[in-house]
Each structure stands twice: as C-alpha cells, then as structure tokens.
Image 1 (cartoon, one colour):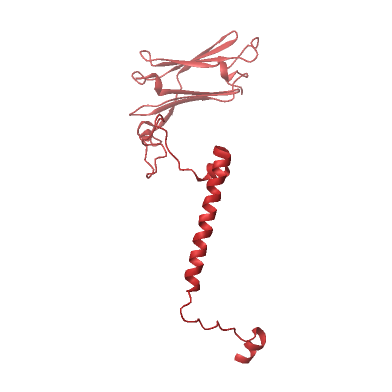
Image 2 (image 1 turned 120 degrees about the vertical axis):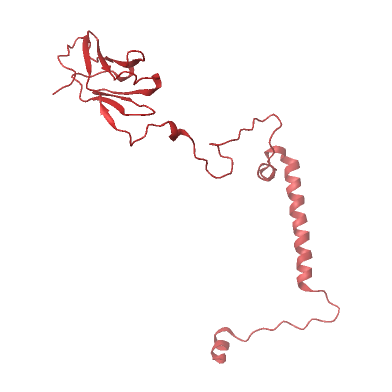
Length: 199
C-alpha cells in the first residue's frame, strides 16, 4: 500500500534539520504578520486622513455612539431586546364565547339622498359609544355592539337595495335610548328605495 501512495504522490519531503541557534519559523511568521498588520493599520489611518468622513473605512469602522440630545424610547411593545410582552388588549376585546344575537327590532326611512336605519337595543345595553362598531361596504353594512358582560348584538344588511358611498356613511349612538342610527349615503341620489335589502 505504501508503494502505491508513493507512486501516486511521490516521496514525502522532510523539512531540513534546524541549525542550532536559528529562530523559530512560527515565531518569525508571527512577527511578519504583526508588521503587516501595522502597515495595514497605517494605510487605514492614512486613507481616513486623506478622505476624512468620506473614507470607506471611516464609515464602516467608526464606533456607534448615541448623541446626547437623542430621544431614547423604551418599554413594552417596542424592540427592547427582551422577550415578547403580552399586551392587555385581549382583556377589553369582546369574547368570542359570548352569544351573538341579531338585532331584529329596527326601522328605516328613505330620506332623498340618504337612507336612515334605526336599530333599537334592549334597555341598558349601551353604556359607552365605543361599544358600537360599523363597517360600510358599497352593497352592505354591518353593525356590532359589544358588552363587557352579556350578549353581543349585530345587524348585517347584505345586499342593500341600492349602492351606497361607504366613505360618506355614518352612525351615532344614543346611550339613554339604547338606539343606534345608521345613515347610508346613496350612490344614485334620485333612486327610491322600496326596501332595505335586495331580494
């Protein structure tokens, strides 16, 4: 086996014996490396001196410092290097396990260029205007009323009798009457609505 390796790769060359008193090549290599590093460092400094702040090495080798007048923001919800923090938003969000009831007590009127829908809720349902959310689309609207305790109420009309302009539609809540009034702006102002929903 040794003869096959010798045939393929030739005889190994042995390092000549080191004469007495000669320097260690590894040590001399380290010294040569140190002098090369010093030359590189001086070239780096020379480049920075010539080109100043426009030098490549200046831009990529300077130390990052936070200016004294910088506004430092920290706290939960920001990238602060710690583990993620669970926010308390879920505590105020309506629970999905609360029953969802359709609002069946409502009336509406065609008021020329607008249609008004009056949604009547059970007494004491509305405690705060923020309980009511409304989503308007060109052919539908969806009102949802959430409560801290008790049922959630919703009213969805889809498709509407005519097309509406979602950006111009609005709603308002009457806390003392437990009523939500939805105002729909018609796209075709002269169109008369004979029903609220299209069959």
